[in-house]
Image (cartoon, rainbow, N blue to C red; front, side):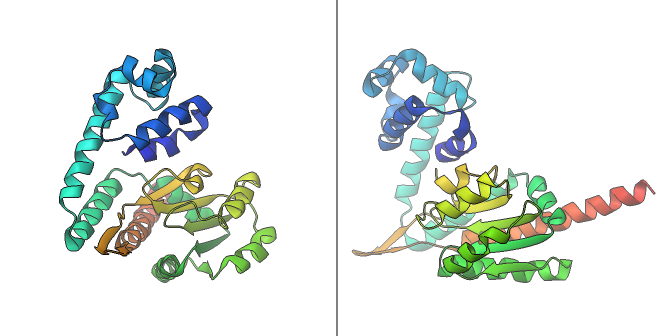
Length: 260
């Protein structure tokens, strides 16, 4: 689990002081793991206790364990920089997404899908909408009919009709699209469940719901002015959600038959 994912997971436990420390760590990820707790506290202008409490909020036993985690993250980023070619970057993203999926329990999300009266899928861009349409296509043979929301205007117009019996799936590359966050905040405030699918990083969208899915897609520079971001990992995560739903419903049916 990366630091950004930990921040999303424990977001509600973190305070302003914690975010101040994390901002420093994120801006100095290649060096901060070298600091002892007293030196890091001095760099962040906080107390030693503040660093320790933050480590524990992120589910580490103490700063020493957190420091090992930061060192591992820095070494992994260094390896990724060494593999900067486009094809290798795509393979790295796919492998990272596969590793994440192997350790992700989707049963709660599958239960939401199974029990929802209506399911809507919104992609915040052209490629994201393509992912939404593919997700819609996959679920048809299971008699789950997902409605794709085509654009932001449609999303805004439909907002007042959503209920807590509906489920919304939101696909966003960054999870920080300014026009998307108000809708997500409204869904959260009204208790309407939604699943976020974003790139694996700390982002506002993922913080607004406990139901998060992540794809790893790191931009690769293919010319002096052009960056390429792969969406294949997003399609992979969508496929994994569908396959998990198949497993969930088949297990549910077996259980119900055993109790008859």
